[in-house]
Image (cartoon, rainbow, N blue to C red):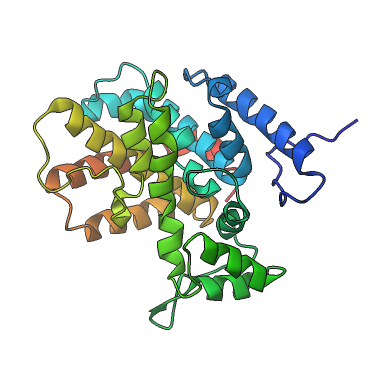
Length: 297
C-alpha cells in the first residue's frame, strides 16, 4: 500500500522513475483540497493548472491557508471595504491560484521549469536576498543552498533566460508575471478576468504589476476600483501569511512588519493605503481565530 502524506509531496526531476506516481498522488490531493474549500473551482476542467499546483507543493498549501484566512475575515472586510461580491469565493479562488507561477513560465514542461521550481522550494538554509548592502544573485543562492550539480542547474536556468548574475529577489518576484501568463488563456467561467487580475497582482506592494493595473490614477469605474482593492487585500494576506509561515513571526510581529511595509509605500495613492490599513486592522482583531491555521509560533 502506498504511503499518502498529509501534505503534497515534492515532485522530483522528470527523469526520476517515481515522478509519475508522486505527480498523480499530488494532483489527486490538489483536487480533494480545493473541492473541500467549496469555492466553485473545478480543477478537473483545468488539467494544466492542476498539474502546476501539484508541482509547487508547499506553496499550494500556503495558498490554501490564505484562502481560509479570507473565508474567516471576508464578512468583516466586505463591510469595512464595501466589497460587492456577496461571498468570498472569487477572492478565495484567486488566493488558491496566485502562486501558480512558481511552477515556471507558461508553456510545455522543460528542464528549465524544474530548475526554476528549485529556486522556489523553501530554502533549507536561511537566505537573505541582501548582504552587505548588495542584492544577492542567483548564483549566490544556488551556492548557499548546496544544490547537487549546480552547473547543470545554472545552465538550465540560463536556457530559461535567468542569468546567474540576476538578483535573486527579482527572480522570485517574476512568478507574478508567470501567474498572469499561465492563467490568462484559462479565463472563462470559474476563472474570470477579475480573478486573473487579483491573482496576478498579489505583489503590488513590491511593484510587480503584470496586469497593468493603474495604481496612481485610480479609475472611477467601480469594477476596476474593486479589482485594485481586492488585489491589495490579497497582497496584504499574502504578506501576512508569508511573515507567519516563512518568517516564523508571531501575529503581532507580522502585523508590525506589514504596517511598516505599507507606510513605506508612499508611491501608492492614499485611498489604497487606507484600504491596506483597514485590512491590517481586521487581521489584528482576528488573531485568535487565525492562530489555529499556523500552529504554535
